[in-house]
Image 1 (cartoon, one colour):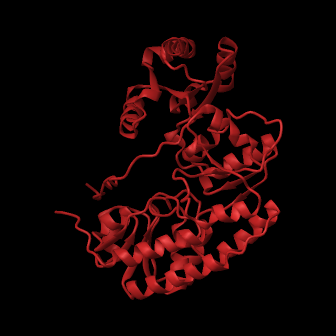
Image 2 (cartoon, rainbow, N blue to C red; image 1 turned 60 degrees about the vertical axis):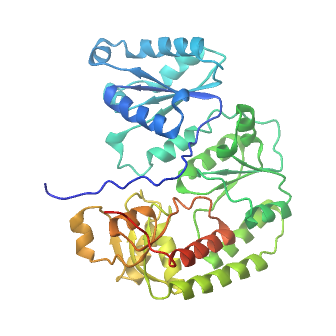
Image 3 (cartoon, rainbow, N blue to C red; image 1 turned 45 degrees about the horizontal axis):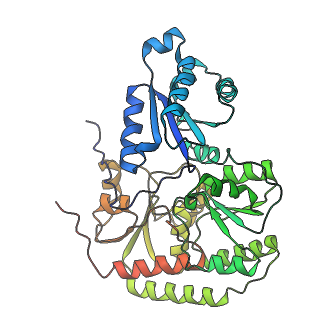
Amino acid sequence: MASLSYQIPDADRPKRVMRIPESHALYLCPNACGRRQGIRALRNGIADHVSFLRLTQADVISGEYERQVGNAVEELLATLRPRPRVVSLYVNCIDDFLGTDEQQLLDELRERFPDMRFLLSHINPIAADVKRSTARSIHTRLYEALEAPAAHDSAVTLVGHFEPLDAHGEFFEALQASGTAEVREIVSCDTFDAYLQLAHSRFTVSLSHMGDGAADALEQRFDIPFQRWHACYDLAEITARYAKLMQALGGAWDGAAWRHRAERAVIEARAAVGSLPVAVDSAASLMPFSLARTLLAYGFNVVAVFGLHLKGCDDEAERLLADEHPEVAIVRSESYEALSGFALPSRCLALGRDAGFLLRAHHLVDIYHDEGYFGYHGVIRLMDAMAHEVGRVRDWGA
């Protein structure tokens, strides 16, 4: 064996699945792909909302594939109770090889079932190295069932996240000051009618690169302007973003008290952590290089960034980090050789479970993809977590 790689164990946390309410997913795939998606559906607790059309070699060769799709949909709609309001089709790399006319497939289904909405997403591992990730593509598709509203209301829609923002944060206070009556998120929609309200909002905020395509599509289809607010823990940048947001929404909000609280939290966390090495992980933040640069500016001893799961969403910060702090290790592989080459310490504070597990870190802040950490309140939560975790040692077992 050329190298030894570790399978990172899943954190013991509740699963959140982003899906259109009252929708049903139909995967069109051979056994191998179906098995993987079936296990994922079981683990995520959505098995009742997922079905599979198993494709065989004979189906592909005979050309029966596309006809079977319509028959499968007919059977689903006759069987499922309650009847779904949206059917999401998921095709895979076989369709790349076959050259399936996906638009024609959708047109035929819409003609055959005129009262049903159909969406189609591509799960495409053979093109996994493209800049536009599968997650971003699927996330964008989630908003395609929306319909043009008669008028826009005062609400703001958030896209690009799995975890709802913490209601105790200052973001909602700032939006109220700008005249925003409601904040809408697909992850909080319980019904299809609530989902349709996402298109009625006057403004969209994209919280990650995954949501940028959806925000752009909402602007193109429904004339809803948007701003990007990807994960950020830099207090000066947060202040600038709020000023820009208030200008766009036509409001005014004074966040000085919140910023002061965040500054105090940084000072207290830095005192608690001291010179302890810190490793930042892309499992913890979708912008790990930006986070590392911010922590270094705050005075923390960042020694490594684990960029194991990124697809070009934080490239500029990575380049700046390498130029400004060449002493910080950038880990791109889980292999034993890669890790041993950096000689990273286990007596450290890891931000993110991947780095924590691989290093057997003594201290771990177990957050995942910024999970609701936002604005000044997000900085406060992160600093409090760092200060708390250095007070206990993580037991990774044998």
